[in-house]
Length: 109
Image 1 (cartoon, rainbow, N blue to C red):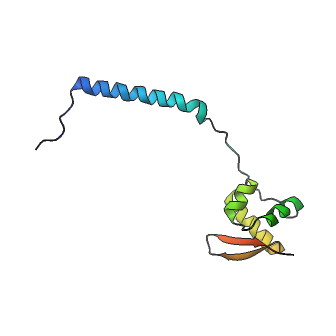
Image 2 (image 1 turned 90 degrees about the vertical axis):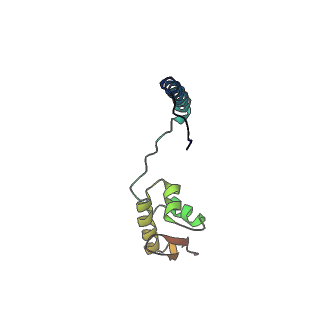
Image 3 (image 1 turned 90 degrees about the horizontal axis):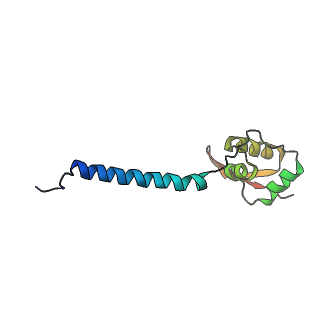
């Protein structure tokens, strides 16, 4: 039948005060280092006629929507559309994939 003994009111107050002090200390420490700069992610797909972008694409071994999105700072949905446009123009070739993700590779000219 035992179990943990219930704390008295004074003991509960002390524990709550100690916890509040620790929380305040954590918040003070996080503020200076916790400041992150928000990046605005572009929605517009890059131009497939731009030679610099096509050259960057050809340097990559495998092209996934995530890799293209992080490389050019665009959304994944825009990266998917961009890869479809590149495939239609003949710059990349579909290697494998399903309805969720597709993997492309640059075509060898």
